[in-house]
Amino acid sequence: MSDCKSTARNLSEWFATPQGNYVLAHEQKYFDHAVSDIFGYNALQLGLKGHDFLRGNRMPLRFSAGNQHGNEVRLICTELPFDSDSMDLVVLPHVLEFSESPHQVLREVARVLRPEGNLIISGLNPRSLWGLRRTLGNKQSYPWNGNFIALPRLKDWLALLSFEMAGGRFAAYAPPFQQAKWLERFSFMEAAGDRWWAVSGGVYFVHAVKRVHGMRLIKPQWNEGLVSKLLPVRPRINNRLNHRITLRNGTEHR
Image (cartoon, rainbow, N blue to C red; front, side, top):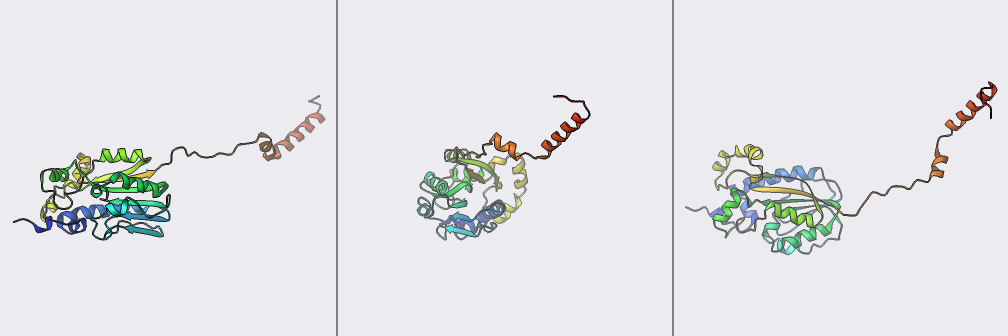
């Protein structure tokens, strides 16, 4: 008998299944930790509006844009209604693999991020048991109908947009079982996966920072005359006293 929950119509429905909840737990844990030490004023989450991946962040303004059910991300990301260089943090939970134009999404994110702003992405890994399930199984339902993006390819896209890798990790190493009891039985694979086959987790996280090339630290130009005037006067006074003492003792003649 087939599992009716396997025909999820959007990501939020899939996250409510045992299989999706297994992934969601890992993602929430990572985002909570990753955003907690990022500071600034404005943070933005794109997609999956019903799940708060910014809850661990303390910025005064936190925005969430996207469909409540998380299955229409393409309409909200290609032209973001925010000023350029206005965001300190942007998180993209599974936006790119369900977007018709992931390059344009990243370009818009690069536009709205301030220099040195942070970008955190989560995505399903095609080079994993979860990616194999997508290749060999039915692609009609979420998340299998998405276009899983390989991590090296994503890193190349980010590099072209002047992003620099700042961190990341893999998670969800258990096979993509639909039943919670089987996922629980294979929970030992989490620790083993981190140690022995780290790049094969079902989901990956990427933390990147927007760099602006050509920026350099401006240093003051020192004026030697000004510097000499700013030197302490005590050494010069001591030199005069020493000169007078030597003259009185007759040990120095001009």
